[in-house]
Image 1 (cartoon, rainbow, N blue to C red):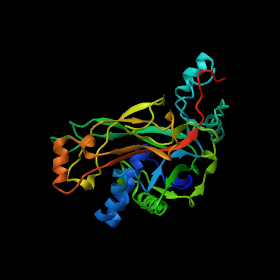
Image 2 (cartoon, helix red, strand yellow):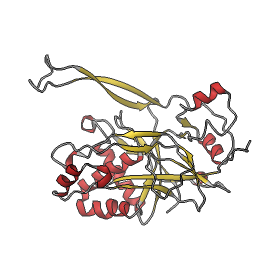
Image 3 (cartoon, rainbow, N blue to C red):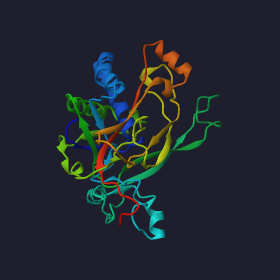
Image 4 (cartoon, helix red, strand yellow):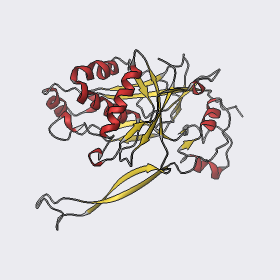
Length: 316
């Protein structure tokens, strides 16, 4: 794959769905299908995913110039006990600190500040009996987020191959116009590309690297390394509404958050992870119902990798 590049996104407002790589890829695939049709979707997205040869792989979107805190951070250096507890909740790192961790050096832990503000707003439920917000209705909370700086941006890192960068840029532009994630119909998740791709070789320049950090939310493949540190969470999703006449919920998927670190014993790869096919993604009844319409969903659970030096137990 080509050299790592950085892309800047300028949010046009708030968003509801977290900017996770697999969700972004799925949303871009839907935007591509809406514009260019089923054949283009199969050729440019689904078939390369299933062949483990995606035309491009992306990271999660990070606020500003920050990067995800590696999951190894609380364990690799001699931190005071009270500091170690705080480090488990550490979410973002500056670029300088992240590069130090890549090189096996203790980070300075510069404070990146409050980068994202998470809030909630109240909505009314609709009574199934009266179809109104009357006596049967109640209030519930809907989370949403925005950048703490009005003029801030989001950063996505990417690797591409075989012309994939062109498709990535076009798909991102399409998605930004319609909005990303939940509540896009009311204006959430809109964004613009802020300039073109910028090479980012500094994150790949780690002599002696024998491990990697994933910049993406992903699900490891059966052949991926297993020695490492990671944070797990269970993802509950559903298919895009245009793929069926009613909501189709996916099976819960165990995912690794961005910042997962693994030790490798072989040549470092540009990405890890694997696609999640229909058999693991959906129930049998949902698969059969969708297959009757010619729909065979795939979730791209690839992890964009950057190299790092793995620290042994005797390292200081």
